[in-house]
Image (cartoon, rainbow, N blue to C red; front, side, top):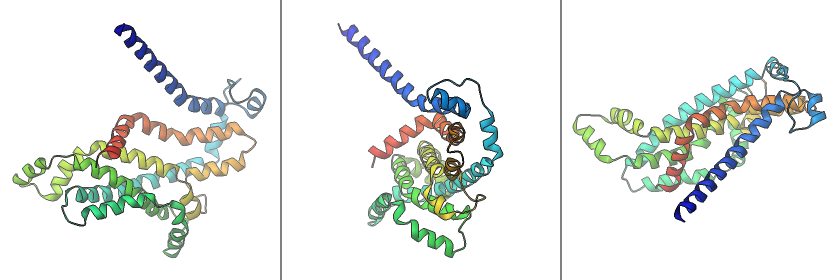
Length: 277
């Protein structure tokens, strides 16, 4: 009887896993097969049909229209913003996890409270500030808001990771003559690798998909990022749905790769950030 129950449980788990896998993959599969259809094929056979012929010219047309420029802008802004964000967050998190002052916990809670600030509340002040300092319609003008709005949750997750690192390791290193900078770079940062990967994937995807700041703080196509390209293509190819799917599929490739290579660390890090501390 117990063996029968175990078999039933395993079958239920396998069935659940199969359903979850299908639900997860199906949107990307439908996006891909519709991106290689002709507009006539899509209109005649519908959304769920297989393509009558592979129309790779949709992708060729998208790149000829300059989507690579939008893609490059998104990549530059995301990489630069993420590098600055991680440096600031790692330094702040180390201080929050090790400093034993009266105001440390209060300041940490204040940083965590900043996670509740709505992006739209700060949109107009940030636009005015960006315009006044001469960064409007530049990629540099997007870096500051991207770093600022992703900093609280990044500090929150990394601080909880660093609090789990045994203090004895640092004390032993100090006895051996290790300074604070070397201690931070050779012990704390390597041991926080799982947390760093977690916030890197989380923040990179948030920056890659960000729309509001990119719309308000940029104007020319030379400074606009990939989400705005999707918005522009929606109007340009409103009657050519397969072309829209081609643009969408190109835009989600980096996110698919990010989750594929860092899914286990992302889940581990988010669970740690949610439970610890």
